[in-house]
Amino acid sequence: MINPDLAVNAWIPSIQLPIFIALAKGIEFLFDTLPLTIISLAVALVIWLRKSRKDAAVFAGVMLLNAIAIEAIKLIVHRARPINGLIQESSYAFPSGHAATALVFFGFLIYFAIKYLKPKKQKSITISLCLLMIVLIGFSRIYLNTHWLTDVLGGFLVGAVMLALSLLTLRILEKNKKS
Image (cartoon, rainbow, N blue to C red; front, top):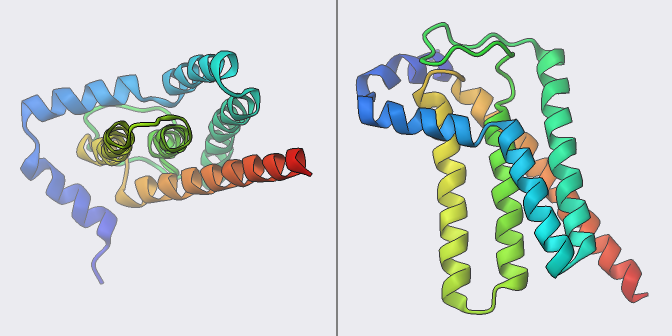
């Protein structure tokens, strides 16, 4: 039986090019869990001041909870990273914090676009760019050989659960407000 993690990890060097490695390293830096959590707090502040305190509080809260959950899962699972990574990471591999955080952050931006943007074209462009960023960030982790395929998929799963629970929380808060 073929191990998909090993197969993808062995295949990636055959498609690596210096320009794309540099791009992937830039994505790795900008969209690491800590910078993206800080950016999300700034976004939450803008939403707090302009639109909805409830949306802002849930968004900021889930971003912080996501960062904590990622670290907790990494400590429980203790999965080693690929040894041929182009960036040396000191933390454990599973789940990919970049993938989880990207899904929560950009998933919330999609939610905000649907809720707050009026022109359909603006919504479509925002949603498309957010989806592209989620995919690019996840792929960059594999491209740099800093994560196994299943680390990224696991990160997406953690992020999807966090996003779903936070959106469910918002729905419950909205229903309670109307009652």
